[in-house]
Image (cartoon, rainbow over all chains, first blue to last red; front, side):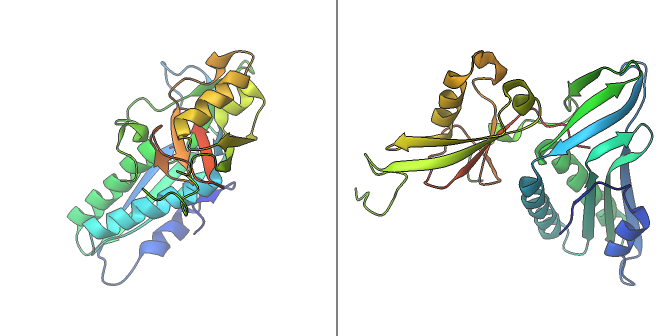
Length: 149
Length: 95
């Protein structure tokens, strides 16, 4: 399954991937490149990935979500390459017969993706400089879990 | 214990693994993939130590980085097998 794209994320296509007449509730999470006071004048981010592992890890996360919420259907995309400020870099769609399962499954997928999917970002600033950044709001690093989980 | 059919555990058995570096580790070291050969059993942590020992500045890769073996997160104690792909992962930053 193609979880990575170098093009802008096809959000309607992602929603269509989880749509079904039996699933009345759909949830979409979009994570976009932001500009804020603490981040400084970020004009874009270059995303790189361990592409083979991204596929494997997203497969595992979606399988886990399907096991936890069997009535829900989830899909995910992550953009790689240059992403300008304001454009989505990640999207997760979830649909279920009722909203509670759709919200819960979507939340699970995005939180696990942030903790486990091997993607890296290098911020590009307005003055032409660059800097590597890492996620700080996520949970324990995967390596802190037992092997062969 | 029988080691005959287990290349990861056989003393004296040579194993070769590929170590891939990503993100800031690849940029800092100039390395993207390195083949490592071990005489006898070796762990992912042994591979990290081997890589660090070859660097002009070992601090370019931390002593305990995130590790993946065959595209799955793993601990440094993971015993390697011939043909394994080891990934040295900088702190994740997806999303």
